[in-house]
Image (cartoon, rainbow, N blue to C red; front, side, top):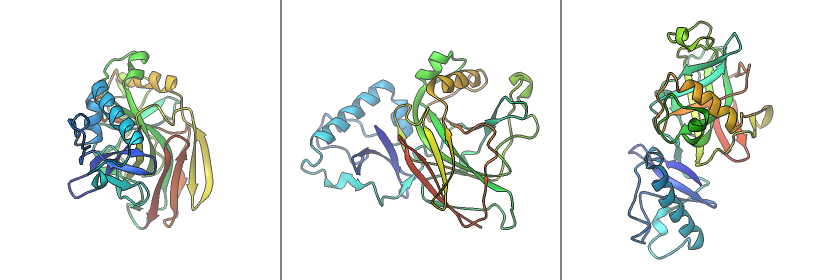
Length: 287
């Protein structure tokens, strides 16, 4: 199942993709049994755990079997053309993983305020900036609490996946150790950098995208292709990170290609990240 956040003046409402349409979960289903639960957000769905997934699956199956029962018209929106926000509106923790200078993994804290949804225009932090870059990534969204977890426990905490376009000055790679370096041994924690963290358009409620090839297009040209880590490798890394971070539903951890310093941008590009299971995430760049 794939979830989206439908953009509106209140910050967004959750929807589920069925074919080429979106069902607005806030409108609900005319069936009393299927309309008992109307989640406020995608994170609310993740936080509901297995019970929430079961209810959502029942609704999805009913919509596939009978997509247009009486009084359901207002709940349907076209997938193509509906304004979408980030599938996770404001994660409690936003980590971007890169390779540290010593070859270890560098978890870089990003501010949730840098989050943006699909098809947005991303502007250079400064018109004179000459080192603005983009990386394509796959993000894991946490579905259950995870702290000091084994790899098996970390695997069960993966709630879903989504595409990421990370825009920042310089490469997303810390130059100096951050405040947690003593405990992280050969790991580094990097600081903030100006930019934007574009995610979406959909959140797949499975480890979709992991182990798949991810393409980065600039102005329609395939610039870079890389293979996302598989679920086993992601679980190992989450297990290591959970020694220092207490993950909660909705937290987002983005995985990118190793040793990738990003593609330098000029300021008038159309950018897209593509993966077979996660679709296409687009953004425009301007000075």
